Amino acid sequence: MAANLQGRHFLRLLDFSPQEIHDLLRLSATVKANKRAGVRGRTLEGKSIALIFEKPSTRTRCAFTVACIDEGAHPEYLGKGDIQLGKKETVADTARVLGRMFDGIQFRGFAHQTVEGLAQHAGVPVWNGLTDTWHPTQILADVLTVQEEFGRLQGLALAYLGDGRNNMANSLMVGCAKLGMDIRIVAPASLHPDPDLVRQVEEIAAATGGKVLITADIASGVKGAHALYTDVWASMGEETKIAERIATLGPYKVTQKMMEMTGRRDSIFLHCLPAFHNLETEVAQQYPEICEVEDEVFEGAQSRVFDQAENRLHTIKAVMVATLGR
Ligand code: CP
Ligand code: NVA
View 1 (tube, rainbow, N blue to C red):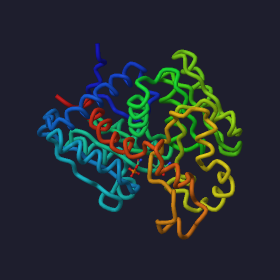
View 2: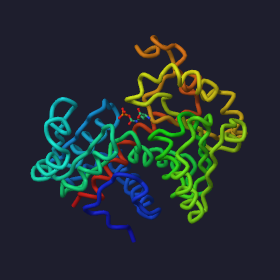
View 3: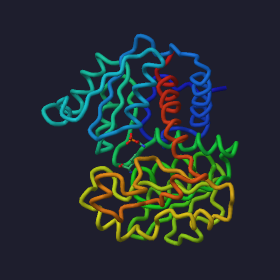
């Protein structure tokens, strides 16, 4: 029987059981199939949803907006500078006001504490659209993409190369361990994940049959991997660290050779996006070496990055429908 997630917040995958995550993936597949078949849902009809963004976003903002509209809800974008949150008004006060007017709240921003504060005080479901520490909705899209490719998740190996302490590394570790996967964080020692989180993830993996490897060694990290995953080297808010990260993470750039080092012909490439893979952006022109993946891989036959991006819509819709839908 599917778990009942009505009224729940969605802040971190640590708060969800493997079965609850599988249920969300099943619902994601259903709403995806419905969308493809042109079947519109009405599970959020009459609801109003606040979308708070302290940081920029393409995929997350658009996924929440389109998912709301697909299910009959009204999305209201509250961008940086539009509201008083944290500046002239406390998080608790803003949460209580928004909770009286809206049926659900999405937050993307800096401190994870802010989204926890909103959830504590709003009285309506709060969904985390990325904080400095976690990016849980992204992981649902990532594992859905892996599941679509291989037909299962248990035992599959995913190697993440890059900043091992950022929101993506943290969330992938937790999500993959909960789903019984073999998660490898491949990063220089200075960017290895928080040891307390690694211990927690190892305990989760012990219970699910998953595996966890934290290593600086690329060859052993990618060997046998079904998926290689990377992210930008400097996350939003870390712009002053770009030069330092280019120096530290240069060897961890995902290359075609690295894809071959997996030893698997069916391995896929994943990236949460946005990605630096050529020189066609303003930032890449300023820092030509800021390139976490070769263009050949990004554009190549093993890349699934745009399936992943599309899956943000279906998985975010599933989270809203499961926690708030009728
Ligand atoms: N992957 C992701 O969260 O993309 P956006 O920053 O564009 O929302
Ligand atoms: N680690 C990246 C993820 C972007 C989706 C960031 O926080 O900027």
